Image (cartoon, rainbow, N blue to C red):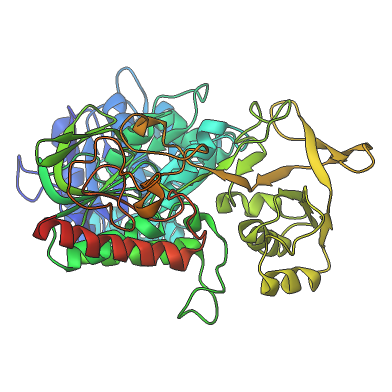
Length: 572
């Protein structure tokens, strides 16, 4: 950055340590290079250990430095600007700097002849002090003023913001997608509404007008405008490309079954790659509370369980790719080839398919248009705060819907479960039904479906229809969370892996028809339990046909699939 120097430790060099980056900044701007160096020298001598000293020789360069500091989450304690500068005066600079760092204390450097103008400027840009040049000795004429300004700043400082910053709109679907992606991948971030004062400052620093959202600012100061998930993942430090070309085991899907397979595969010495399209944890990772999982008597959130499992897998050496999905799978001689969504191919001795299932979308007018704008699939815990005091509707009658109802009841004015069937007993655990009955602001509407979704730009109401009487009713609603059905996304395996009529993957004995092995089966044995129609490709968790849809069984199948993979590697 031309004309800007950050905390020189010697003339011509720049300090850029992490500790320096955490300190509040004192920025000085003077178009006279000798004066600029003198100011910086005196400031370093007194304040260099606890503050970063940044100097600039033009208003444009100083503003560029402030924009970069804003994007990096830096703090600015004091601004010292020369009153008389070409192109941009000190007053003009301070006016623009206030938009970026309104809490910074401000002072003008003036000659004696400009004293009256400097005093007048106090009312224009709320200048805290003015300093006459020259200020020798600084111990008498500079440091006392700076001490007072720093003391004033310390009483109301800017909070350091070194995490990812997301500037968006509450009802923007891309903004929700970015927030949800970061939250589910356990990436710390701070949310700013685009029309909030700080959100406007960040947008200005990034050179954006807010027309396209979200704007995601990484800790190193990069601004991404409506980023694709793969670009966002890479920018925040998540791995998106494989390190090697070949693995002992490739696990496709990062839900409980995939994470279980990764932990057991890597811990038993297999070079393991896990490929996850969105975030580890899968559907279970969106559960607000799982209370019947073995070993957690007080319950555990899906996000906590997923995070622990992910860290455990990484601890044993699993390589995890995020924001990538498998697009093809094919035998290549004695190995298997997996084509990823970005065109990269990796090879493997064995593969475990653990892609899980997805919630079925509402099939009614308005639902698609308002997805991410009041209509959400899964619990969408990032929306919890905005449900405060509102009427929330949850569509579905299984455990995930019940867990979400318990979670949102603590904030919402009311929570209504919309259930197509006659009750909850057929699909929800008994303990959860009893919990719901004890919560006063939770109600259940049985024999009911969502017929239409209404809203201009965001959800405003739902039309609910009773399937027994046929009577429809429009109800006000700000949030609707959908947990209906389970459908696999296995079209990419069509023609490669045998599937049942609903798209779930067939394994083991289910592949035998009248005692005959599946077409193309090349081995002189029947497929093992959990083995698909392609030798060495195993299936675990909810995507497997006729599997038990429980977290514990998915983890168990992931572990069992690894055992079978070891047996396969030993010689089929």
